[in-house]
Length: 355
Picture: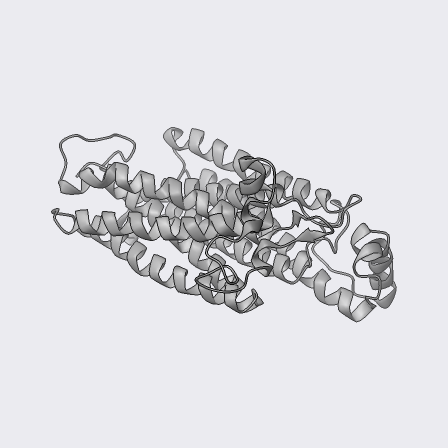
């Protein structure tokens, strides 16, 4: 129980950070789906108050009108429409700023209250470095869409998303270690309960899930096409076939395998579909193996989370594709990926820890 843990203040602080990272990911998803990410054209706009007067709004809109997105895509946009897209990007940045305050001010308070010991310091330093890098990567991503081509690179989008997931994984793992103070989760045990037999299976699932999440980001981003940039999630909106074929010729339309898998919209969507099937197959293997093992309650809980999570995520993925990625389904699908990621971290922790 957290209430009986000597590190409960630090644990609550870390779990609050985890919650804010989740909110950051969700708002980032909405920002992307509403095409709001390029509405604020400068990094210096980090104040806590949005434009409040008509004059301030016109000044902000004038800056946006100089951006490639307005000139080439949104040239008919009026101020009321701009206010809508501005809101989501502004909210996204403010969540990031709130997260910075929670970590920084929380750490100061915990140090004053002598809740931080020397053993925690290396982890905390790494945590702050990763948080700072998340902000830098965010601007690096947005910057790519403020140049000649008004679209964010799908590689940078995936990097930004995975940096957020990595920050969450580190924060969540740290909290799990404090929640289980008598065991060292980093020590690989060769003499534990049967659940330890699943440790490399759980790691394999985690690696496959990361690749799938990366391809999910690729699918949500823009990929260079012959005439324009294309969102892989907005083509072949049918299931189980891609159009009328299982593997349409567009999947292999580029010269190299790398280009087809990384820079071809059709190839990217095909990979996202195939990886989803592989995730289901690998989880089925873990499920089968776990049914023959003596697991503790935490290991059983982790596998249960994954089974229900993958089932729901697969259904959401199909619906999101078939309905051409509406905002609500897109957000639910990304939320599903986040909780699958968290469940996978939880399972790895409990298959590697000593009993």
